[in-house]
Image 1 (tube, helix red, strand yellow):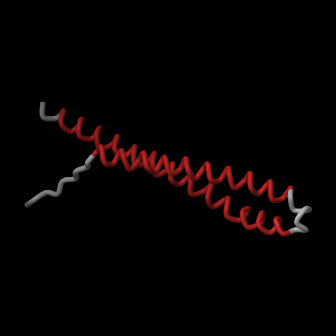
Image 2 (cartoon, helix red, strand yellow):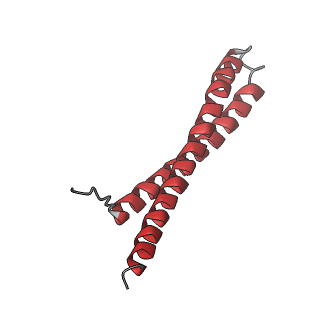
Image 3 (cartoon, helix red, strand yellow):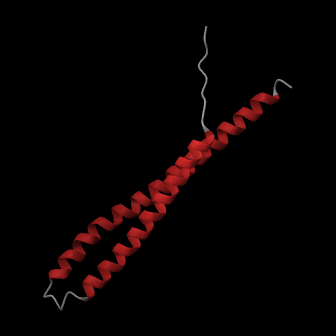
Length: 99
């Protein structure tokens, strides 16, 4: 009976984790920029007779979703790094049994 084995290309998976983390950082920056833009548009609303208030309301609806996506990307990064650590520890602990 053949047994299935699990293999992981650790450097490639670490690269994925770094990419998730970097994308989370980018989304955090986008969220902060959207927040600043919303504040600016609200402040200028009385100049434009409310036209910029509508744009600010649109941004205010999108910004929480961007913030959630940033948190998810960082969570994925930490999950992938935990999987790498478990894979390495599992290999090391399993190999000690045969020494």
